Image 1 (cartoon, rainbow, N blue to C red):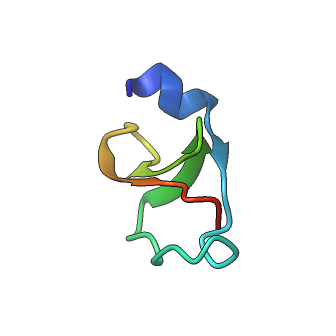
Image 2: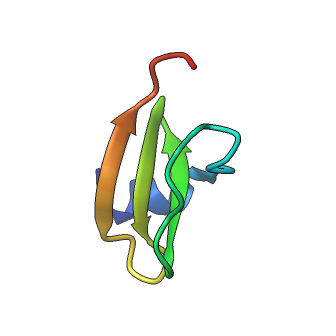
Length: 54
């Protein structure tokens, strides 16, 4: 997954999707059934969680 994928992914509410609270400067987004935690400013990925249909 590259920066273009990150910038095109939709932000998600981490509470609604039962994800951990992102650190300051990070946010969760969803792309192609995956939840991606990355730095807002750079798109550097910290974590990816596959969506298991929850």
